[in-house]
Image (tube, rainbow, N blue to C red; front, side, top):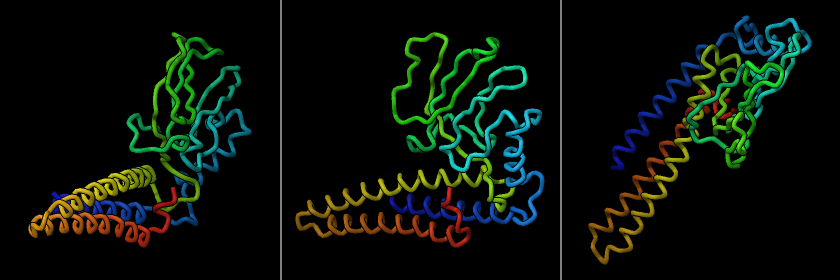
Length: 238
């Protein structure tokens, strides 16, 4: 079982490393961002905050972290309210791990008070509270959903693969917790086998090998962190 897990870990390390290298290599020159680059898009959105005629006026500035992905209400020239999240935010209906009060949001939808034919949906940070509409038949509450950034200002090296890069990072963080839990479990099982061996050298050695293999797998996994950091020092900066 542990041999299979170690092989899976090795494959994941190679895949994540390859993806990180590919993402890093696809970016353009940070000094010369193109119109479609992160910096220019975020700059356009920021500049549009004072221009009601801009297509970006109804959207808040780029989010610098998932916790900034909540909706902001703005009113257009026709006095109709709009609730929008930053354009560089994407919400996963099925969270991958996630942290309360950081990247997990609840979604409340209800009729738009300024235009009844439209519905308004607000995304607000979820801190673990119960998700309930409070008996209001015109309001629906769901979640939690997880926010992930599709591109970020100042990270032009990500090129068009910003979402992939952040998604890989999200999976890596989640799997790190799972693997640590698995290693602790296998170490406990190995320790129990050693303490209950009652002089049986085969059972004692089996438990000892189980602990060693579990710890080896964890070391391999976290060595990948060093590899990824060497390839791209900002890999863990999200």
